Image 1 (cartoon, helix red, strand yellow):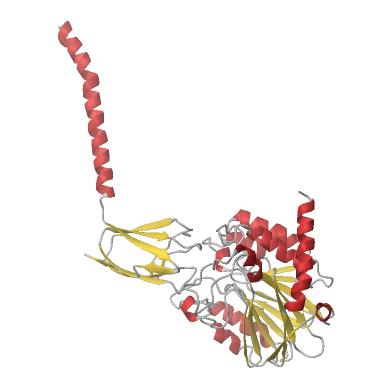
Image 2 (cartoon, each protein chain N blue to C red; image 1 turned 30 degrees about the vertical axis):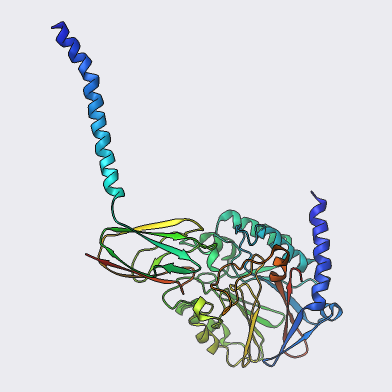
Length: 308
Length: 120
């Protein structure tokens, strides 16, 4: 029993080395993204600091597409912590749990704690199913405002965690709400325009696909407060696939899920879990690693599937 | 006297049985009346409500069944109707006892929209 997870980790690590050779490195310089294939050596020597993003672990989900979501989440976390250069911290962009159950949050907390990395989270709609949202806020609400939004500074970058999954109404989209927008405007007011900004929230802040509700109704309003900044990176989850877009100085990026893939807009019938052959599942799941390159402002995002 | 007393004694359990049976029938009657109230089904499939718009008579119970792998909720716009989380294969029912138009969404996936029109 005790040997198994280790062997698994080692296999996972070896696979990780293979992904590094096959993944795309996204460097965003002055709002213009460059992508190129990277070798593992190049990835390992990225200067500056890096942090990691995981998303949509859906702990508690147990349907044929993936009956072992705890295992795949664990594998994603192992892949991060076993890298030679550990990320400075880890951001989870929501849907930690599937049904907001205390035991699902407990599993999540244990696995996240085992990484020994500082953890920052924002809730997904699956984390706030309770009327009072107490299971989420009890664990991750300390020191946050409103429904769990906050900001912090790290290595000269200003990070902002936003909540866009509460009180969703007839717009069909995610929502930040007036109080949060007001707070955001004040939060960035005193910052110099050269401060790199990283915003993270669960539902895409831009309209990724309106028909499936993949966007935030007042996301554009939030971005008006960030117009003057030279480098803004927006990290989201929710849609269980990598999608990227650049608008002016703003780069948008969504992460894979560690639990199950969802359909592609325009191809799939709906936004639900997408059944894939079991052998291919791990090529659809993964983590993102973001590096601040110290020469200038660019942020490089490397998405790594759990296998592929 | 003794005979009539005896017969009275013998009759008593029978009367009780009859009364019990009567009560049972009344109770069943009440249950049957409830069970026979009008019902209407809304299926949740692939992130859509079917039928999407439903017209019912006042006093109809609407039953939503979630056939998706993902939980959903029913949240009426501008009314207090709000379901708990409806997980896969679970149902939520609500008795509409007032006339009017109820526009609703899924509280988790607000692009899912439906409408119940309640008539007299």
